[in-house]
Length: 352
Ligand SMILES: *Cc1c(COP(=O)(O)O)cnc(C)c1O
Image 1 (tube, protein in one colour):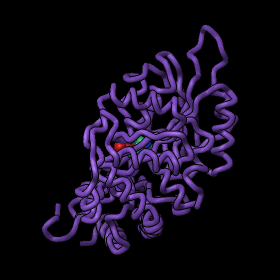
Image 2: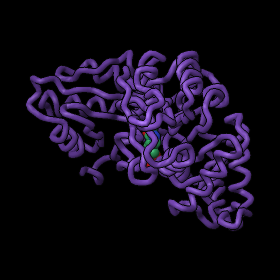
Image 3: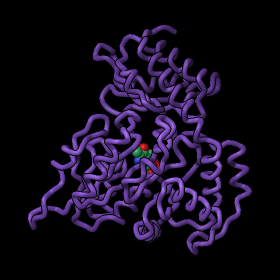
């Protein structure tokens, strides 16, 4: 990697951000207690703030987005139950089979477009009551949608699908790892997106720039169960106010900046679209993620592309055959994006 010659532009994920000096200061000054004993004042403050922002009774601070989703899944289900979720969802692809391992549940995938589907697709996947069938118990939606390209659920459709899920007797959970991006994009408040759900998760370690941390919000009874399973899964921490302080700092200072990440992602997509051999749907870039494909005529696959780009100091991630993902975040500037575009152009046109 050409680290010594030029700054590495890391677009693998919005999780690669480093905590800023001011965030570290807030962490250093955090008032702490013991959260296993329930008396860390900074964790309590963060949980109250998240509950309020999401319009819910309570919230629980957890180490990761995976633990947020998995404690919620465990809270809502019993072994042998079935979850319905879109076929590209994070809980299916990137959580190591945890619904099966930790909750003993099956997941029934729903066909979707960019992670978004409607009432008819949901209804087709909810099983009738019968001794033959698994019990359909939980519906999980994801907003913004990761594999869907950072896509944003239209608010009315989200409400319609979640409400129909409840009518069908399901609990409903929103994977809101990047809910902040959806809110900044549309101006919709977190509580509006969260309203039709029993529980909603959110992450502080993605675009908001924290080193660690996620949360689950919901009604008191659901969050009591989330807290129990957080402990069981090994995620209840001691002086975690140090981490909660970073999240509180980020909520105050880093949410609005997501708009810049969205503008940078749009600029990246536009730039890439001018390079022969790259197929990118510019209009499909709704938030901070850009997915693109290498044309069949290009004599390299996604791994070779990422390797050659790495040699020029730009990091991206292959996510499928000839498919590549680049994610904008607060540690890359607009200049970095223009630089990255030129380095991609250089490797694809073979110029030095
Ligand atoms: C990243 C992500 C998670 C999980 O977050 P981790 O902190 O990496 O465990 C959950 N859901 C979605 C949609 C994500 O993008």
